[in-house]
View 1 (cartoon, helix red, strand yellow):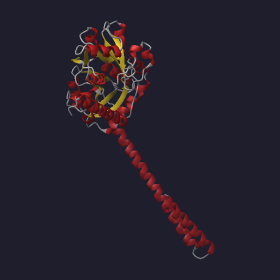
View 2 (view 1 turned 90 degrees about the vertical axis):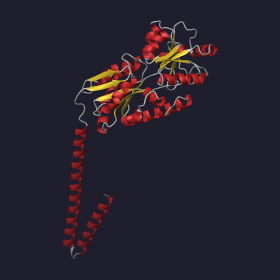
View 3 (view 1 turned 30 degrees about the horizontal axis):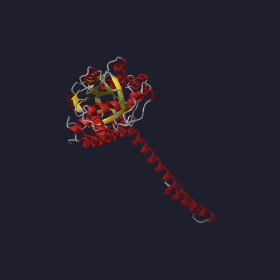
View 4 (view 1 turned 180 degrees about the vertical axis):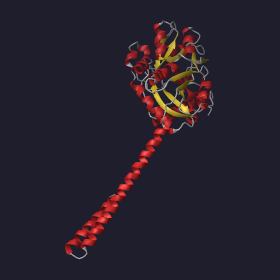
Length: 365
């Protein structure tokens, strides 16, 4: 553009000079005006062409993102009523108010069946899956053959699921992590912990064992309900559960809390107000951490325009008071991230999980 303007200015100046000197002024001026007119006409045609292209692209984009047209299914590879299910339902309940379609949550008692159902569903934007980084753990430890990073499309990373509570029986002879570790060291092989083999709880207790030098007896407890009932009943010494379930069981006199495991070790004021036993493991001298977001996935092959449309439709969830209230009740933090941000977050979580799995000797990939 700068070059065209310079050429045009030079032509005008030359024409003016010729006019002042006399001979050929009329012809030169006419030529200059003609060239200027051609230039302006060309610029006008270019602008019209670009505008037409933009309009066409906009129309094509609108057609490509004409979503949603029908009901949406959200597959959840976890039992109804558990921590994962509750976190997802806070999203879908708020989302349904603004997305313009009904959203049905389908739970699976068998996590792998749920993951496979989500993976093989039609890539049409109406069959989604919600899960947390536990699915990455399952892949790294061989509990699952599905690699979420490669075999799904990432739609959105939603709320941080919050710090988790370490629970024990109400009559256990320890009231905090220091006493718990001391007891475990004095009673080798007697203290058990509830894990879902190859899942996040396996990583959490593996980290605690490594940080403290304690050898725990790992006992399979596939979901949150199993952990709560087995610890409350005295069948398993300790387990990790969501903040909300911990509060309910503590208030019911069924368990007590001896610490919170978080992503960065920061104590939450409202939580530690319940007592020093609610401080993070890091605050109590145990170098173990864990944090995860709820991820929304789509089957591999779902087109980019649809992924962006779904992602954008989830953003208003952040402003829903019931969603905010639900997150607060579970100790979660309301969040929403773009498709690109969400993909990077998942990939970063995978790197961390690979490192932890390798350090614990449970990485089979």
